Image 1 (cartoon, rainbow, N blue to C red):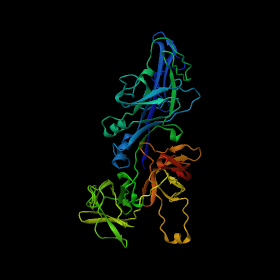
Image 2 (cartoon, rainbow, N blue to C red):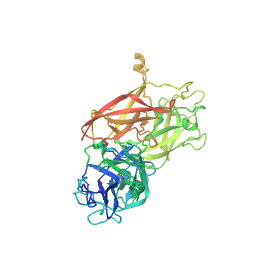
Image 3 (cartoon, helix red, strand yellow):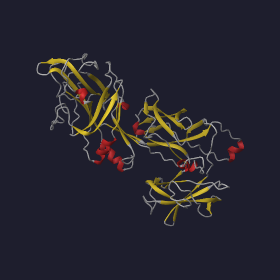
Image 4 (cartoon, one colour):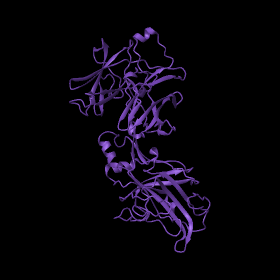
Length: 508
């Protein structure tokens, strides 16, 4: 599981905008229960003798449950600091008005705790309460009207067309919250200082309230109104979240093991092996090893058992020097250990070898491997595969994390009856496979392909094939969903979506 979402636990709008009379500002208004969030800067709706040409602002405040993030990291449900990224995500709300364009929103951490409030009125500002433009809560006023913010870190998001969702990497801030080096009071989302600022001089075109206009030619610009769905939105997938992303894939080459080739670079000659210590159905650390290291030795095979002396290994990966007889396996997580090594084929290559995992004279595990010669091609290969989901259920609960396991074979594979009765038919391993989740009724993308730098939807593989784990709680109950797959094709340096979909339903 390499994606986990944390929904906002508070959000609201604060504003100093005028109500419909254009004479009273809504600085005491609260909109904590509104189903959308708003950011705007309006210039020149009215000219008051005490203020000159008016400037009106709205900002959005959002907070997230950092205590849940801390608990998940302690329990190993998310990756360690430095091994993952955190993304703030807010979703555009369509309106009947023309959107502003070419504007920038900033995201900054708040320095004070604040109250969400129960207000709803986003037009006449009749719902008074906290938080608002003047006060963070019933007992605390802002030091600076409009909210108090940390100077660093500051994040910016550009909206060239106006209707884009907000998505920004806020990893430094979230890690500060988790480490308690910065108190979690959430963030403020607002226009940049220059876009909010009041400038004297001739007014540009502004339009009427609610009709967003961006004047690029005058000395004053109006930016309004950009709206996002709030946490009380009826649309499950549009609510504000902080999304954790990391590469959790385990790439176990036991069924994808190749002898070294002089045509391949060193990293391609390495094979990664895993040891999984399941006891009574759960992973536990090896006694006497714990989070320490193991030695891994390779032996030739005779009658399904190791025979002879340990095989000399090539240097590289977890083998320190050429002709060493051991690779050093490191601790991955509870009950899981891993090492990488290369194996050179003899003049008469071994059809099977055994990997023996040992420490302090105790042999903990012996596995079997059937190495193959690394394939070579005179032209770019073309792949045509058939994929099936072997353990798909019709229905899943939002309270579970499910593992989906796949079987892949070449489409042209066509065995004889004799072959069927005698041959082992292992799955084909796809070293770079990714998944996405789509809601069936409207093709809404619930989980996008995470094929960027985070590789958050990269699938794992082991000797039984490719698989991934999914937190079903990220999906809304009462709907059917489709799993879609994409395989990376090195010969064209691109991902290729597969012509297959797997459907399931989610219930509470």
